[in-house]
Amino acid sequence: MLPLNTSLPSPMSFFLLGIPGLEHIHVWIGIPFCSMYAVAVVGNVTILAVVRAERSLHEPMFLFLCMLSVTDLVLSTSTLPRMLCLFWLRAHDIAFDACLTQMFFIHSFTAMESGFFLAMAIDRYVAICDPLRHATILTHTRIAKMGAAVVLRGVAFFSPHPILLRQLPYCRTRIIAHTYCEFMAVVKLACVDTGPTKRYSLSVASIIGSSDGFFIAVSYALILHAVFRLPSREASLKALRTCGSHVCVILVFYSTAVFTFLTHRFGHNVAPQIHIFIANMYLLVPPFLNPIVYGIRTKKIRDHVLSSLRVKVAWL
Figure 1 (cartoon, one colour):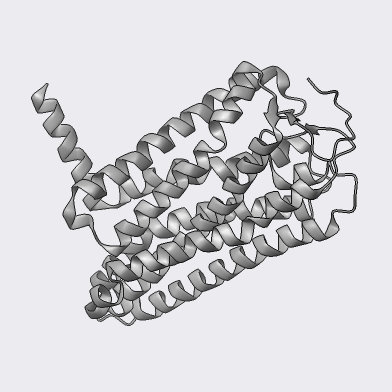
Figure 2 (figure 1 turned 45 degrees about the vertical axis):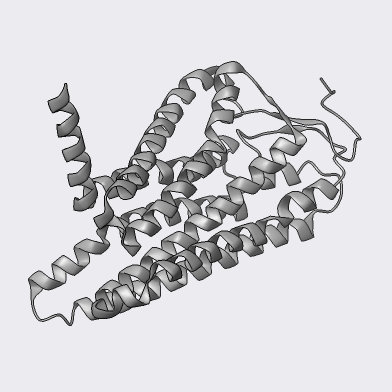
């Protein structure tokens, strides 16, 4: 094992500290984290299986939901298994390249999740404001192009992260006071001025998050304008119900994202434990809640799952 202080340009490994001050209860903290990860995996895999098996669900909304489920699976799997190794097996060391790879997956797939929320908002806008042309506007080809654009955006904007960090010399310590390779926690270990690197990261995250949030808000403003012009109250409520699941998951995602950003930007007096817990919730809660919200609130998915369970029980 390398000493904690090193003058190597690129250390062979970093030392993930976990949650400072709470090391004695890491084992217990890992239990709810593991439970959330298990629910996220089972829930998102179930959504993918249901949409694949039921041809009536091959609609834009459910195809975008599948893209969101894949994103959630990758995002949670890139952090949780390694985090549980730290909590339960005391595996603190993480290779330098593995650290940069984890960081790339976290940031790029978080951007993809935001992009898929925007794509789903566009789908809801077209479905409610121009329902007769919904199928012709959002064809499978156009949906595939939108999905590819979201993926390429996430990869293009966050590929520089590991490249920039690989160029930095790390001559202070190799201890990362975090449960995973979080960008700001790693960049603090460099012994040169990292202002431009930090500004690039914050600027990209701010631009992507704010632009997606702005266009989502515009989409729902137009949706509300169209809904309130419907002739009957029953038709208005039915239209709004189709957006309920999407609004719930958006609120969860953006509320944790904004809270994380604000604590990094302005919360200099916030305890490190709070910073780390909020960052973990930002990565764990959306993949955990998305399949639950969509499974409960989306009738087609709920009915298909219940019918499948009834068939299996009958066979038993």
